[in-house]
Image (cartoon, rainbow, N blue to C red; front, side, top):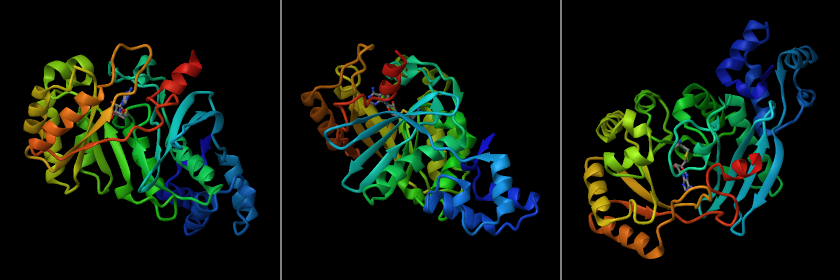
Length: 343
Ligand code: SAH
Protein backbone atom coordinates (compact mmCIF):
# COMPACT_ATOMS: atom_id res chain seq x y z
CA UNK A 1 0.00 0.00 0.00
CA UNK A 2 1.11 3.56 -0.70
CA UNK A 3 2.10 5.82 2.16
CA UNK A 4 0.19 9.08 2.54
CA UNK A 5 3.65 10.72 2.63
CA UNK A 6 4.18 9.72 -1.02
CA UNK A 7 1.68 12.33 -2.20
CA UNK A 8 2.65 15.88 -2.96
CA UNK A 9 0.02 18.61 -3.12
CA UNK A 10 -0.78 17.89 -6.78
CA UNK A 11 -1.15 14.16 -6.18
CA UNK A 12 -3.43 14.79 -3.23
CA UNK A 13 -5.60 17.22 -5.19
CA UNK A 14 -5.97 14.66 -7.95
CA UNK A 15 -6.72 11.87 -5.52
CA UNK A 16 -9.41 13.91 -3.79
CA UNK A 17 -11.08 14.85 -7.07
CA UNK A 18 -10.98 11.28 -8.36
CA UNK A 19 -12.75 10.17 -5.22
CA UNK A 20 -15.40 12.88 -5.36
CA UNK A 21 -14.04 14.98 -2.54
CA UNK A 22 -13.29 18.68 -2.79
CA UNK A 23 -9.66 19.38 -3.63
CA UNK A 24 -9.40 22.27 -1.15
CA UNK A 25 -9.14 19.70 1.64
CA UNK A 26 -5.60 18.97 0.51
CA UNK A 27 -4.25 21.99 2.39
CA UNK A 28 -6.02 20.94 5.58
CA UNK A 29 -4.62 17.45 5.21
CA UNK A 30 -1.09 18.70 4.62
CA UNK A 31 -1.36 20.81 7.75
CA UNK A 32 -2.32 17.77 9.79
CA UNK A 33 0.52 15.72 8.37
CA UNK A 34 3.34 18.24 8.30
CA UNK A 35 2.44 21.04 10.71
CA UNK A 36 0.62 19.20 13.47
CA UNK A 37 2.58 16.06 12.64
CA UNK A 38 -0.14 13.60 13.63
CA UNK A 39 0.43 9.85 13.72
CA UNK A 40 -3.05 8.54 12.83
CA UNK A 41 -5.74 9.59 10.35
CA UNK A 42 -8.29 9.70 13.18
CA UNK A 43 -6.60 12.80 14.58
CA UNK A 44 -7.77 14.87 11.58
CA UNK A 45 -10.63 16.35 13.55
CA UNK A 46 -11.98 18.66 10.83
CA UNK A 47 -12.02 15.95 8.13
CA UNK A 48 -15.15 13.89 7.51
CA UNK A 49 -15.44 10.29 8.71
CA UNK A 50 -16.03 9.15 5.11
CA UNK A 51 -12.83 10.71 3.91
CA UNK A 52 -10.84 9.32 6.83
CA UNK A 53 -12.21 5.81 6.14
CA UNK A 54 -11.22 6.16 2.48
CA UNK A 55 -7.68 7.21 3.48
CA UNK A 56 -7.39 4.18 5.73
CA UNK A 57 -8.36 1.94 2.81
CA UNK A 58 -5.84 3.48 0.44
CA UNK A 59 -2.82 4.65 2.47
CA UNK A 60 -0.57 3.87 5.39
CA UNK A 61 0.50 6.60 7.80
CA UNK A 62 3.46 4.92 9.46
CA UNK A 63 6.62 6.48 10.87
CA UNK A 64 10.04 4.98 10.24
CA UNK A 65 11.25 2.61 12.95
CA UNK A 66 14.30 3.77 14.91
CA UNK A 67 16.69 0.80 15.06
CA UNK A 68 19.71 2.61 16.42
CA UNK A 69 20.74 6.13 17.39
CA UNK A 70 24.22 7.48 18.06
CA UNK A 71 24.92 10.89 19.52
CA UNK A 72 28.26 12.60 19.03
CA UNK A 73 29.96 14.95 21.49
CA UNK A 74 29.33 17.85 19.09
CA UNK A 75 25.58 17.12 19.10
CA UNK A 76 25.39 15.29 15.77
CA UNK A 77 22.74 12.57 15.93
CA UNK A 78 22.87 9.64 13.58
CA UNK A 79 19.76 7.51 13.09
CA UNK A 80 19.44 4.05 11.66
CA UNK A 81 15.87 3.62 10.44
CA UNK A 82 14.09 0.47 9.29
CA UNK A 83 11.72 0.84 6.33
CA UNK A 84 8.51 -1.16 6.06
CA UNK A 85 10.31 -3.94 4.14
CA UNK A 86 13.05 -4.11 6.77
CA UNK A 87 15.68 -2.22 4.72
CA UNK A 88 18.00 -0.10 6.84
CA UNK A 89 18.88 3.52 6.05
CA UNK A 90 20.78 6.31 7.78
CA UNK A 91 19.75 9.88 8.46
CA UNK A 92 21.92 12.43 10.25
CA UNK A 93 20.95 15.52 12.24
CA UNK A 94 23.66 18.17 12.52
CA UNK A 95 23.84 21.48 14.36
CA UNK A 96 25.58 24.38 12.64
CA UNK A 97 25.81 28.02 13.64
CA UNK A 98 23.10 28.72 11.03
CA UNK A 99 20.76 26.08 12.47
CA UNK A 100 19.75 22.45 12.28
CA UNK A 101 20.43 20.45 9.17
CA UNK A 102 19.38 16.93 8.15
CA UNK A 103 21.36 14.73 5.81
CA UNK A 104 18.98 12.34 4.08
CA UNK A 105 19.42 9.12 2.17
CA UNK A 106 18.02 8.61 -1.33
CA UNK A 107 18.60 4.90 -2.01
CA UNK A 108 19.12 1.66 -0.09
CA UNK A 109 22.80 1.18 -0.90
CA UNK A 110 24.45 2.81 -3.92
CA UNK A 111 25.70 1.68 -7.32
CA UNK A 112 28.12 4.51 -8.05
CA UNK A 113 31.00 2.55 -6.53
CA UNK A 114 33.22 5.46 -5.41
CA UNK A 115 36.34 3.75 -4.12
CA UNK A 116 36.65 5.72 -0.87
CA UNK A 117 33.01 5.46 0.22
CA UNK A 118 31.50 3.03 2.74
CA UNK A 119 28.08 3.16 1.02
CA UNK A 120 29.58 1.71 -2.13
CA UNK A 121 30.65 -1.39 -0.26
CA UNK A 122 27.00 -2.45 -0.39
CA UNK A 123 25.30 -2.41 -3.78
CA UNK A 124 22.00 -0.65 -4.32
CA UNK A 125 19.02 -2.75 -3.32
CA UNK A 126 16.36 -0.30 -4.36
CA UNK A 127 15.40 3.34 -4.69
CA UNK A 128 13.66 5.02 -1.79
CA UNK A 129 10.08 6.08 -2.40
CA UNK A 130 9.34 9.78 -2.08
CA UNK A 131 7.45 9.01 1.14
CA UNK A 132 10.50 7.36 2.67
CA UNK A 133 12.58 10.44 1.90
CA UNK A 134 9.92 12.76 3.34
CA UNK A 135 9.62 10.57 6.44
CA UNK A 136 13.31 10.91 7.24
CA UNK A 137 12.84 14.66 7.42
CA UNK A 138 9.61 14.33 9.36
CA UNK A 139 11.23 11.99 11.89
CA UNK A 140 14.05 14.48 12.44
CA UNK A 141 11.55 17.34 12.84
CA UNK A 142 9.58 15.26 15.36
CA UNK A 143 12.81 14.72 17.29
CA UNK A 144 13.41 18.50 17.26
CA UNK A 145 9.83 19.09 18.42
CA UNK A 146 10.93 17.62 21.77
CA UNK A 147 13.18 20.65 22.26
CA UNK A 148 10.99 23.15 20.41
CA UNK A 149 13.40 23.58 17.55
CA UNK A 150 12.84 23.72 13.84
CA UNK A 151 14.77 21.92 11.14
CA UNK A 152 16.05 24.58 8.75
CA UNK A 153 18.19 22.82 6.17
CA UNK A 154 18.20 19.64 4.14
CA UNK A 155 21.09 18.08 2.29
CA UNK A 156 20.49 15.08 0.06
CA UNK A 157 23.96 13.74 0.81
CA UNK A 158 23.27 10.48 2.62
CA UNK A 159 23.62 7.08 1.01
CA UNK A 160 22.68 6.86 -2.66
CA UNK A 161 22.90 8.96 -5.79
CA UNK A 162 19.91 11.33 -5.85
CA UNK A 163 20.00 11.74 -9.66
CA UNK A 164 19.78 7.94 -9.98
CA UNK A 165 16.39 8.25 -8.21
CA UNK A 166 15.46 11.55 -9.80
CA UNK A 167 11.65 11.53 -9.76
CA UNK A 168 11.22 10.32 -6.20
CA UNK A 169 13.81 12.77 -4.88
CA UNK A 170 12.15 15.70 -6.67
CA UNK A 171 8.71 14.70 -5.48
CA UNK A 172 9.95 14.37 -1.90
CA UNK A 173 11.60 17.79 -2.08
CA UNK A 174 8.37 19.32 -3.40
CA UNK A 175 6.66 18.13 -0.20
CA UNK A 176 9.55 19.24 2.02
CA UNK A 177 9.57 22.64 0.32
CA UNK A 178 5.76 23.13 0.17
CA UNK A 179 4.57 25.97 2.45
CA UNK A 180 1.83 23.63 3.68
CA UNK A 181 4.32 20.77 3.88
CA UNK A 182 7.55 20.96 5.86
CA UNK A 183 8.03 24.51 4.54
CA UNK A 184 11.80 24.35 4.21
CA UNK A 185 12.92 27.06 1.79
CA UNK A 186 14.41 25.96 -1.53
CA UNK A 187 17.60 27.86 -0.82
CA UNK A 188 18.01 25.74 2.30
CA UNK A 189 17.84 22.49 0.33
CA UNK A 190 20.91 21.01 -1.38
CA UNK A 191 21.26 18.06 -3.68
CA UNK A 192 24.62 16.44 -4.10
CA UNK A 193 25.58 14.38 -7.15
CA UNK A 194 28.68 12.44 -8.10
CA UNK A 195 28.24 13.85 -11.61
CA UNK A 196 25.40 12.09 -13.42
CA UNK A 197 25.27 14.35 -16.45
CA UNK A 198 21.74 13.44 -17.63
CA UNK A 199 20.47 14.28 -14.13
CA UNK A 200 22.27 17.64 -14.16
CA UNK A 201 20.76 18.42 -17.56
CA UNK A 202 17.27 17.61 -16.28
CA UNK A 203 17.86 19.59 -13.12
CA UNK A 204 18.86 22.62 -15.20
CA UNK A 205 15.31 22.68 -16.60
CA UNK A 206 13.56 22.59 -13.21
CA UNK A 207 11.77 25.67 -11.95
CA UNK A 208 13.16 25.22 -8.43
CA UNK A 209 15.87 27.06 -6.57
CA UNK A 210 17.51 24.14 -4.76
CA UNK A 211 21.29 24.25 -4.44
CA UNK A 212 23.37 21.89 -6.51
CA UNK A 213 26.55 20.36 -5.11
CA UNK A 214 28.97 18.25 -7.11
CA UNK A 215 31.31 15.70 -5.59
CA UNK A 216 34.51 16.49 -7.46
CA UNK A 217 37.22 14.85 -5.32
CA UNK A 218 39.71 14.70 -8.20
CA UNK A 219 40.57 17.48 -10.68
CA UNK A 220 41.86 15.35 -13.57
CA UNK A 221 40.37 12.43 -15.45
CA UNK A 222 43.13 10.00 -14.60
CA UNK A 223 42.69 10.28 -10.86
CA UNK A 224 38.92 10.72 -11.04
CA UNK A 225 38.55 7.58 -13.16
CA UNK A 226 40.38 5.71 -10.43
CA UNK A 227 38.36 7.08 -7.54
CA UNK A 228 34.93 7.51 -9.10
CA UNK A 229 33.87 5.03 -11.80
CA UNK A 230 31.14 7.46 -12.93
CA UNK A 231 33.92 9.56 -14.44
CA UNK A 232 34.48 6.88 -17.09
CA UNK A 233 30.93 7.45 -18.30
CA UNK A 234 30.92 11.24 -17.84
CA UNK A 235 34.47 12.62 -17.87
CA UNK A 236 35.33 16.08 -16.59
CA UNK A 237 34.86 17.96 -19.86
CA UNK A 238 31.31 16.57 -20.24
CA UNK A 239 30.56 17.21 -16.59
CA UNK A 240 31.71 20.82 -16.79
CA UNK A 241 29.86 21.37 -20.05
CA UNK A 242 26.66 20.31 -18.28
CA UNK A 243 27.48 22.51 -15.28
CA UNK A 244 28.08 25.54 -17.47
CA UNK A 245 24.79 24.90 -19.18
CA UNK A 246 23.10 24.67 -15.76
CA UNK A 247 24.79 27.87 -14.65
CA UNK A 248 23.66 29.75 -17.74
CA UNK A 249 19.99 28.91 -17.18
CA UNK A 250 20.20 29.45 -13.45
CA UNK A 251 21.94 32.07 -11.34
CA UNK A 252 22.58 29.84 -8.37
CA UNK A 253 26.09 29.45 -7.09
CA UNK A 254 27.50 25.94 -7.48
CA UNK A 255 29.16 24.05 -4.66
CA UNK A 256 31.95 21.58 -5.24
CA UNK A 257 32.79 19.05 -2.58
CA UNK A 258 36.37 17.89 -2.40
CA UNK A 259 37.49 15.20 0.01
CA UNK A 260 41.02 15.62 1.29
CA UNK A 261 42.78 12.29 0.99
CA UNK A 262 46.38 12.16 2.17
CA UNK A 263 48.97 12.47 -0.66
CA UNK A 264 46.41 11.44 -3.26
CA UNK A 265 44.53 14.62 -4.21
CA UNK A 266 45.99 17.24 -1.89
CA UNK A 267 49.10 18.31 -3.85
CA UNK A 268 50.01 21.61 -5.51
CA UNK A 269 49.24 20.31 -9.01
CA UNK A 270 45.68 19.49 -7.89
CA UNK A 271 45.13 23.02 -6.63
CA UNK A 272 46.20 24.36 -10.03
CA UNK A 273 43.88 21.96 -11.85
CA UNK A 274 40.95 22.99 -9.62
CA UNK A 275 41.59 26.64 -10.41
CA UNK A 276 41.50 25.84 -14.15
CA UNK A 277 38.27 23.83 -13.87
CA UNK A 278 36.39 26.42 -11.83
CA UNK A 279 37.60 29.58 -13.54
CA UNK A 280 34.47 30.39 -15.58
CA UNK A 281 31.94 29.33 -12.98
CA UNK A 282 30.16 31.06 -10.12
CA UNK A 283 31.24 28.41 -7.66
CA UNK A 284 33.09 27.62 -4.49
CA UNK A 285 34.83 24.51 -3.33
CA UNK A 286 34.30 22.96 0.06
CA UNK A 287 37.25 20.95 1.33
CA UNK A 288 36.06 18.05 3.45
CA UNK A 289 38.19 15.97 5.80
CA UNK A 290 37.90 12.34 4.74
CA UNK A 291 36.19 10.14 7.32
CA UNK A 292 38.23 6.99 7.72
CA UNK A 293 36.45 3.80 6.58
CA UNK A 294 38.04 0.85 8.34
CA UNK A 295 37.73 -1.53 5.35
CA UNK A 296 39.50 0.92 3.03
CA UNK A 297 43.11 2.10 2.79
CA UNK A 298 42.48 5.83 2.28
CA UNK A 299 43.57 8.28 4.98
CA UNK A 300 42.39 11.79 5.66
CA UNK A 301 44.94 14.47 4.77
CA UNK A 302 46.82 15.59 7.83
CA UNK A 303 46.48 19.12 9.12
CA UNK A 304 49.63 20.32 7.38
CA UNK A 305 48.49 19.12 3.94
CA UNK A 306 44.94 20.34 4.47
CA UNK A 307 45.95 23.86 5.44
CA UNK A 308 48.57 24.08 2.69
CA UNK A 309 46.00 22.99 0.10
CA UNK A 310 43.48 25.48 1.41
CA UNK A 311 46.06 28.28 1.24
CA UNK A 312 47.14 27.31 -2.27
CA UNK A 313 43.57 27.54 -3.54
CA UNK A 314 43.02 30.81 -1.74
CA UNK A 315 46.19 32.29 -3.24
CA UNK A 316 45.01 31.15 -6.67
CA UNK A 317 41.83 33.14 -6.20
CA UNK A 318 39.53 30.14 -5.80
CA UNK A 319 36.57 30.59 -3.41
CA UNK A 320 37.26 27.87 -0.86
CA UNK A 321 36.03 26.74 2.56
CA UNK A 322 37.35 24.07 4.88
CA UNK A 323 34.44 22.10 6.36
CA UNK A 324 34.19 21.55 10.08
CA UNK A 325 34.26 17.90 10.98
CA UNK A 326 30.96 16.64 12.38
CA UNK A 327 30.35 13.54 14.42
CA UNK A 328 33.67 11.86 13.74
CA UNK A 329 33.51 10.08 17.09
CA UNK A 330 30.48 8.10 15.89
CA UNK A 331 29.96 6.01 12.75
CA UNK A 332 29.39 9.19 10.82
CA UNK A 333 31.01 8.44 7.47
CA UNK A 334 28.49 7.75 4.77
CA UNK A 335 27.00 4.32 5.23
CA UNK A 336 29.15 3.31 8.17
CA UNK A 337 26.44 2.82 10.75
CA UNK A 338 24.41 0.77 8.32
CA UNK A 339 27.44 -1.24 7.15
CA UNK A 340 28.41 -2.01 10.72
CA UNK A 341 24.87 -3.08 11.58
CA UNK A 342 24.60 -5.38 8.57
CA UNK A 343 27.88 -7.03 9.59
N1 SAH B 1 25.92 10.35 -4.45
C1 SAH B 1 25.95 11.72 -4.06
C2 SAH B 1 25.41 11.99 -2.66
C3 SAH B 1 25.79 11.03 -1.57
S1 SAH B 1 27.48 10.99 -1.05
C4 SAH B 1 27.31 12.31 -4.25
O1 SAH B 1 28.22 11.57 -4.62
O2 SAH B 1 27.48 13.50 -4.09
C5 SAH B 1 27.68 12.51 -0.16
C6 SAH B 1 29.12 13.00 -0.08
O3 SAH B 1 29.88 12.25 0.87
C7 SAH B 1 29.87 12.86 -1.39
O4 SAH B 1 30.62 14.03 -1.61
C8 SAH B 1 30.76 11.68 -1.11
O5 SAH B 1 31.83 11.63 -1.99
C9 SAH B 1 31.14 11.93 0.31
N2 SAH B 1 31.76 10.81 1.02
C10 SAH B 1 31.72 9.51 0.72
N3 SAH B 1 32.47 8.80 1.58
C11 SAH B 1 32.99 9.67 2.45
C12 SAH B 1 33.85 9.55 3.57
N4 SAH B 1 34.30 8.38 3.98
N5 SAH B 1 34.20 10.67 4.23
C13 SAH B 1 33.72 11.88 3.85
N6 SAH B 1 32.90 12.06 2.81
C14 SAH B 1 32.55 10.97 2.11
